[in-house]
Amino acid sequence: MGNEARELVLKEVNRELLLNLLAGGKRMDERGPNDYRQVKVQKGVLSTAEGSALAQIGDSKVLCGVKYGEMTPFPDRPTEGVFMVMAEFLPLASPTFEPGPPSPESIELARVVDRGIRSAEVIDTKSMFIEEGKVLGLFIDLYVMDHSGNLTDTAALAAAAALADTKVPRLEGGKIVRGDYTGPLSLTDKPVTSTFIKVGDKILLDPLRSEEHAQDCQLTVGTVDGYVVCMQKSGSGSMTKAEVMGCIDIALEKGNELRSHI
Amino acid sequence: METPELIKDGKRLDGRALDGLRPIRIMAGVLKEAEGSAFVEWGGNKVICGIYGPRECIPKHDASPYKSLLKCRYTMSPFASLEEHGRSGPNRRSTEISKVIREAFDSVVMSGEFPKTQIDIYVDVLQAEGGTRIAAIAAAAVALANAGIPMKDMISGVAVGKIGGQLAVDLGKAEDNLGESDMPIAFTHRGKEIVFLQMDGKLTPEELSRNIDAAMEASDKVYALQAEALRKSYDSEGGQELEM
Image (tube, rainbow over all chains, first blue to last red; front, side, top):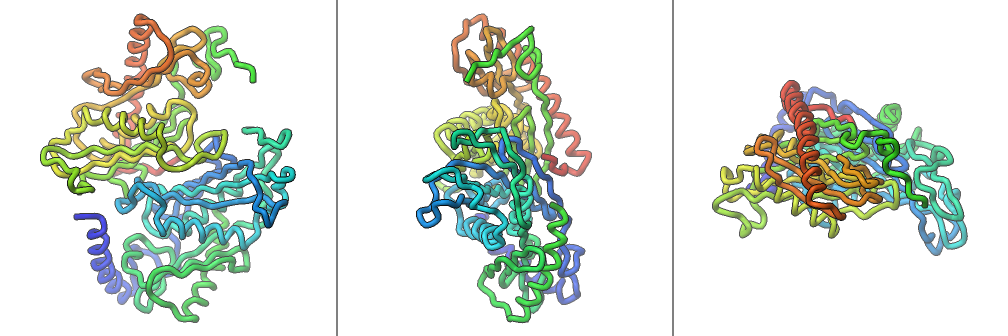
């Protein structure tokens, strides 16, 4: 059976299964509706990157590597450094991921994580100025290695942890000296996300892959302590305002729980 | 930059003897989704491999009625080197390496058992420090076995070469860049057949012969670690918790 056909069948089967479970107050595993799976963060796992972390939520695994580079600033912000988030859905992460150009899903994931970091203003880009026409660039690469659902939260956690692990390279004559650092990257906060799915009239935090198959839609809420810094609804279904607000309350609470792992 | 002396008092830059391997750590079954997987830390290299298949061959017209099509995709992460941020995805170097790794496994995978299908070997270098293709082969062999793909023999290898005028085993990054010769080579374990061989530099036939002998001996040590990783994965129901 082809991968797309397989996904379609799984969607049908898992939706029926999950709706039956939810009617009995259960989900696909033993968790309550607002529980995360086990969260695990390993920081500093790569010595070639200026910052790195492996984040795991349940069986989902995302590796983040942070590299510095020298760049030309954007013309409208000539004295500010640049950072960018990219996501690679490695084919080894899922039977449905295939080699090739970035999928819309991987672009969406990278952009949601990027928006969280950007809106929370956790990185002082002004400190990344080198000289006229030259600034530091910060490349935040997300490597999805195992897809068991809720990649967004796993990726955002990996990025926040890798940034917390990042060391600023020493500059000499306007050039980066590799492997030589002046100190840790100064961060004002650790933005993370919490993702919910809606199935029928039920809302579940941290969906498994099989639960995502059954979803009507998905809502990601990015937070720093006390504030929402990004949101993204994805998938074809809809949510009410009350549902969204309910998700925000839980995301603010769970965000602190996630941050405690960094 | 001044060229460092690669060998001093019989010891190499990292203190190893000429025939010494870097520390190697192998784990099997570290990924949940993949049908087989392995993580290899080999000196400063960190490599992860995932296997899918046998599964439907795409595109269909590539399918063989006689055997499974083995595919391999080796890539290097953009954060794999201490230097510049790289580009993700395949390039000319990784395309060539993917091809020769696939061909190495073509000789042992019993693909005749699964006609019309394909088997995917995905191997990603997360951190590089010289000898990534050999670490990739070590990982792929363990991951294929972990996936339960029948193979006639196990594959293990090492990069040997010549540095500072002497033959050495398991070249690191500086040795690869500054040494006289680099020869990654891989063998079947029982048959001791060479299934992977590349070489650059300048060596006499006598040096080549000694290099191959040294590589064969070192490969047996790698094999022992591969076998141990697989044995451990069975103790824990086919899977181990990934420790990077």
